[in-house]
Length: 143
Image 1 (cartoon, one colour):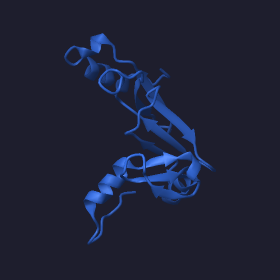
Image 2 (tube, helix red, strand yellow):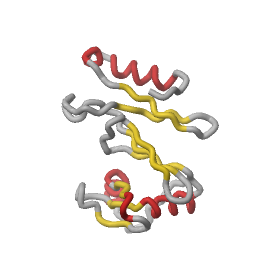
Image 3 (cartoon, one colour):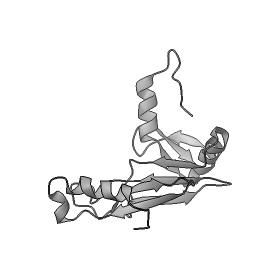
Image 4 (cartoon, one colour):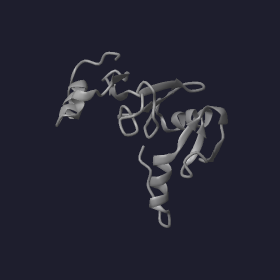
């Protein structure tokens, strides 16, 4: 489903809300201002599950939040799942301890995280780009 911004709607605010909103397991069916980022909203898992069901989706994939293993999956109340995928390892400034990941989706609707840990060799020109490209074109396996 694609949202349509009507007349008088603030497109910049809509984009900011979409980019910076975060899930919050403790909020249940509530939505609250996102005090962590001072932008977007905190959205409870039950509210996310209700929205997915209403729109006919079974998965929400999001980014903009570091994950130790590059990606995490959480089952939502009832049905549906929430994925957070972070594609930059050692964040920030190559000082962090997190891995990077992309999510490979197959034709049957499955989702598999492809994880990696950028090392010294990734500083060479195109090394990281080549590694991601290769991960996306090989059969998905848990990494």
